[in-house]
Image (tube, rainbow, N blue to C red; front, side, top):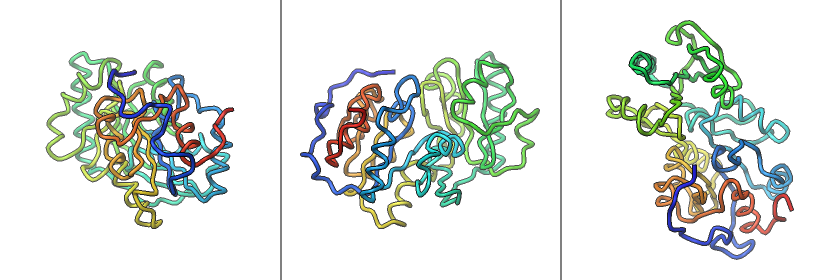
Length: 291
């Protein structure tokens, strides 16, 4: 949802002249950032990605979404692309794991038990246990499963998610109400040792303290010899905060959460105005996407 704030720069005017930035890595969140509010990819995306590849610029989706979901979305251009999945807890390139940050099973199971108690107390929500091989859910109604399918291509309904055999990298909780007001406060006991991150209006993620999109990007920069000055990142929500610190060219979307706007160096047009591709085109002197 949009937020009211004072813009840091005019959204349609990135703060450099055409083609002035030496960019080698572009990292973007998906929902609320690259995708519009109807979850559609922007016009001109594939053409822009082809031009970036020709220039040797690595384009990397960084999302709370599952790796399998991201790989399907970018299937026609996935070769050589780095997918920063599950909020940075699982990073994959050409089917090979580059890094991961699994949860202690005891912690994951504790979050599941806390979720079950919230449900018993009347909160309309459900847990998704996010493994490397699949996501796992106990709740079976279509309303919940429809939300799960948006982000988890590989998912299984099981009787007891705490009994699955997989490396668990995150627990994602979907709240049909407000995740920030209801679910996140209820998980406060876990914040002493782990991250409890509001990743969307209805989603909360529980991960290791060391896991976030920013940590994944810093590892990638180190491995590829790319500096923050050569990095652009785009985000809109609280799970994007750490990655904004990895780039000199950090952009909050015009529709971003106020805290994201405060943390970013610059402002991009909204996700519904093709803000990511318009900003990339302006800064790298590319044809405007979709024109």
